[in-house]
Length: 204
Image 1 (cartoon, rainbow, N blue to C red):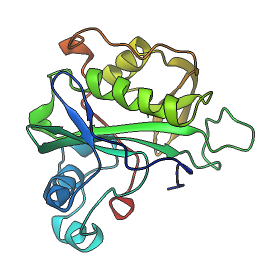
Image 2: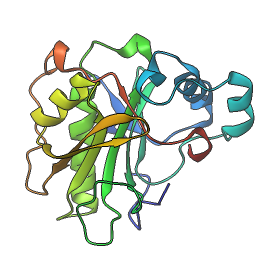
Image 3: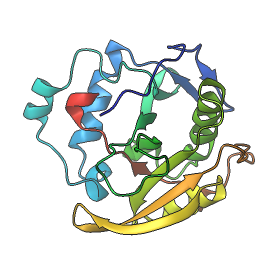
Image 4: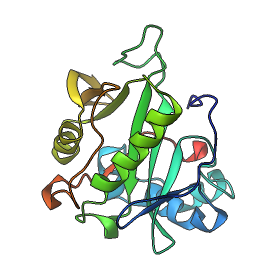
């Protein structure tokens, strides 16, 4: 995982109508482990990891790096949304030399179907646009995760390529710096993208 780059971090917690995006805390560790151990969450992400392995790998305060936001409802973590630098050796690049900012996200199963991503994505993208003005953002998800693709398109990501990676066909989208990050109230329940995250537990 490549660091996002110099920026003012952490920002003040970012509030939406129902959510708070904030820096991770030690009390979030159990939720991070649950995300990586869940067969439902990991269905498009290479499968779950054993809890014992995660207990060893996940640090005391997971996700403590610029660009990683815990998504919380009533102070409790329900998922994460992150912006990291995409590995230049992977397919799908926009900037010469690679290092594009890539949006990732993941939600606990109990948070699915409530259109939380439709609030969390715009909040994170607005922060990024202020911190790194003029930069595009990319997103990569499996074609099988059709709800993620639909939500990406609704929030200004345009399909740039499809390719095979990790044994599955991937959808690669790009959102230009001038794209709108405004979302309608609560979005659409069908547009809720439940999970998509490429980070490894040891990076959290």
